[in-house]
Amino acid sequence: MSAINGIGSQTTPAATGTSLTTQTLGKEDFLQLLVAQLENQDPLNPADPTEFTAQLAQFSALEQMFNMNKTLEGLGSLSGDMERLSALGLIGREVVAESDIFRYQDTPVEFGYHLPVSASEVSVHILNTNNQTVATLTAPGTSAGEHFLSWDGRNDAGTPLPPGDYRIAVVARDMDDRKIEATTLVRATVDGVQLDAAGTRVETTSGAFALSQLQNVKGGTP
Image (cartoon, rainbow, N blue to C red; front, top):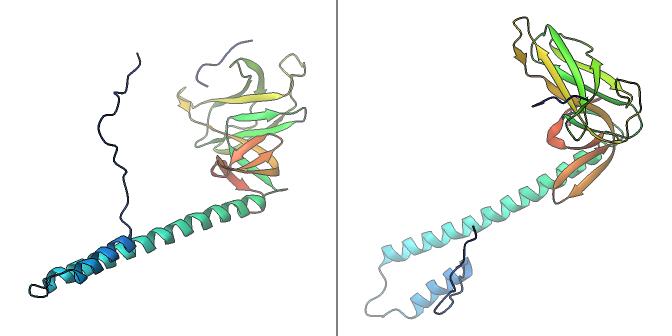
């Protein structure tokens, strides 16, 4: 089978002296300091009104910053929840994901490619995890746009290949024999959703894909 290409330690010095604990000054601490300053000021030499006004402005700005941080945290949490709900709504729907990796599980796999411009010739190759070409398929089209085909998991000799991960390699060239960058696509039906710290991914019989990889959804967009 042929292969397609391109498809000293550091020592930390010991700490010396007294260890200092870094603390963050919150708005309550700021307000307490301001009140303490007013309570302990010299009655015969009160604080400058201008300086006091500036301190109040600093406190107001500090409070606004804390409120803004809370708002942003809330928006971030809401965005994550909306993403999860959106992913759950994709179960049972057909999606097209931008990916050159797919999973074969003893059932035919649908995949394809998108050409930005028309090509004079296109070849489609299936590679295993060792980057070896195991099957060469007839390209379904050379015009600009999306083209899809189905693979039954057999190599060029007609022998069934084992289930596992495989890669799509599309080689496209124009009339002047210049390479055209084709986008590889995998089409499958969503049968589950992964919700974990790594992010939200849709699970299909042809592999798991991040929501950002989805190009379109049958009956709508993700």
